Image (cartoon, rainbow, N blue to C red):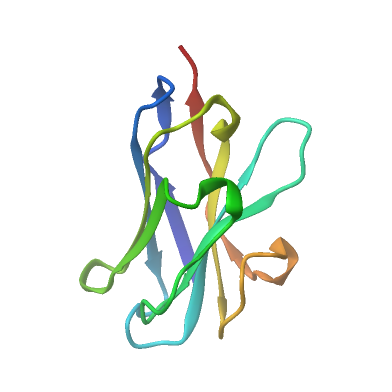
Length: 125
């Protein structure tokens, strides 16, 4: 299994970005995996942001992003998106997508077996 994350960049507060995570070695919509987005800011621990099952079940969001971020699955392209709106400076971090077989939430990064390379999101004026 391999994951390729992209879509990060520099955006002003209040702006939007869409992150993409292309998966290979598994079939979204068919295989039973959890896809999660995590982030790590300088000097902080990696935290779970949002996750969803590969069959696009009920998503999970950490409280700080509820109502602003949306996770979605595009099975045809084996891609998971994280649409981020109303971005705040505290959203600045390296964002990673990760996966494991089966279902879990995003509370423990150590549960996840496969990781993408990370994409940097900087929210600043």
